[in-house]
Image (cartoon, rainbow, N blue to C red; front, side):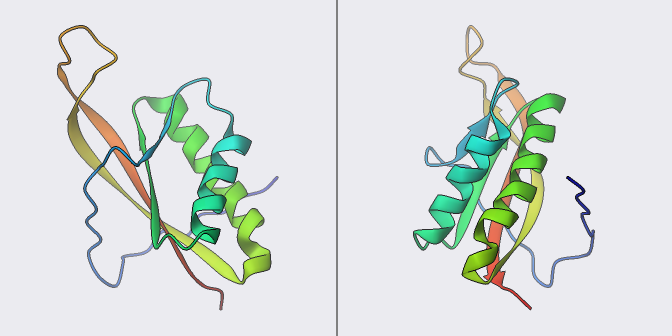
Length: 113
């Protein structure tokens, strides 16, 4: 599938703090399942969906999932936009839970144009 991301400045700054409700992506995460989870939350009325990742493969998986989720919600006349921010969080997957830098995607659904 062909995907094109258009990069532009947001009309307003979007700042959403990471939470325990966020989805996450790991190197073995299935992009189709993550896309379904994103689309499901947006269909259920969520204003935004956040995905927290660490590492190049999970970032790629998340980008693919956003593109797939756009296809999944197209029938609902919604268009996805997203912003990315770097956040420092405790990495509970490592011994001692050191602070690591994560990539935090905030995905918004807007009415399609």
